[in-house]
Length: 333
Image 1: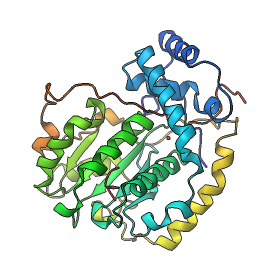
Image 2: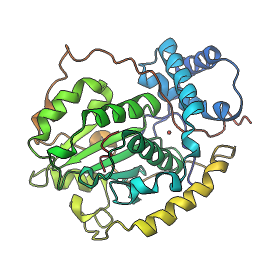
Image 3: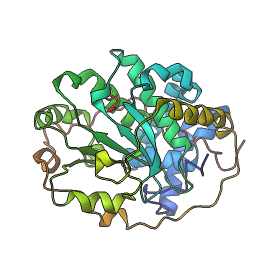
Image 4: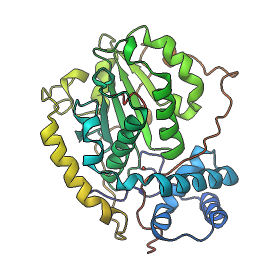
């Protein structure tokens, strides 16, 4: 189990947010939320509240409403109590898994392969996605709050498209895990995926939409993009890397069971290890807008850009001690 998933308040790249104004807003959200206890208290760290504020453009009332809904969702859904045995059947094909490498900024990587979808249960797919999100957050290093999604479209066809699953995925990501996604790389999506992506665009908030990048292996900028973000010797060959290892369900199951054993203490510990620095170029220096897709470059249509009322939101497992007191996608496989 790595450092504090709540991190210090950051922009996802480890840059501290220290302004008195921001701290005042965090304090005001805490006041509006009212007295808390147990896991809710642990969850509502300054960093967690900061993520909700960022997701609501630092609007205190909207952030407080979002956080209240998140706390309600967590109390009812109990995402931190999901265990491997509860979702093992969803995981067996390797449609979604946490890779054994991070990007150069220390962000955990969730590999997704939609073509390996093995379930028709939206409820089951969402539960597995939540498990994967919680597991990625458990493994966040100190000072890091976000993760990367690597989505491999090899073998993807029309039968793998589901608006319902996509809607639920957007809901979980944006409402329950705000500011947890740092980047989603759609690797070699087929042409027929672009119209679908435009269709579901209204489900995505601008901040989320801007984190989704289309990357094609035949694009001249692709290699540079991936090299800037990943150690190519560890990156899987299906994404242009040099690692030829394959997903092994038995090995992965043991990793997840080991992480499951760490989860209870994750929600009670108070000692936060020091931040870790990573040898990587600043995220804002990496050119991610390869000339790959019109969908990626297209301006968000103002008629579709209405703000979606994100009922539930959660800063996700930052359950790390609050000020020392005491986070569906067609599983994008």
